[in-house]
Image 1: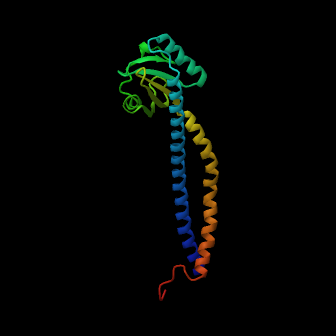
Image 2 (image 1 turned 90 degrees about the horizontal axis):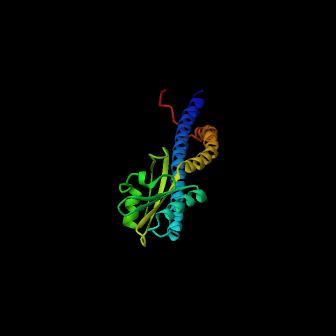
Image 3 (image 1 turned 45 degrees about the vertical axis):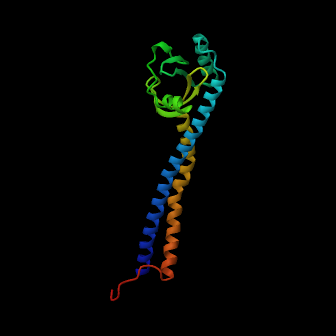
Length: 200
């Protein structure tokens, strides 16, 4: 009876430790997947913006710029906004530029003007959902080309991966329990388990 008690004490200790480790691993995996997917989407956005910079119409032709933005939306399915150095919206694929607020305070615009490129993730007041913004400066015409992509695509892939990972994470405690039990029994059998106090 005492031998069984030692086994169960070690079993509980090892099981709790392993389950905690697996839970922490799940949170870490989720964060890493989200970060990597977001980085990948940022690079895709910057690549698309650089491609758009290479084919920008003349700045003086505002109607051509507006058609260019709408064509981009129809082709890529993402939003495009052209912003000048003062933050004024020159053309947009979804809204009339004259009705849009200044974008001078947008972090990705500020970074693009200062460093040539910038990215940001935040909720869009126009679309009402989280968006990833990637902006690239076109120095020849002093315009910032900004593309916007919904973060829902990142979350969709993240959820799909986590569904697969959750199968492992749900099975892990059962595996941990079995491993803990046999490990505890082996340790007790080899005399490494907790000893009874003398005279007990």
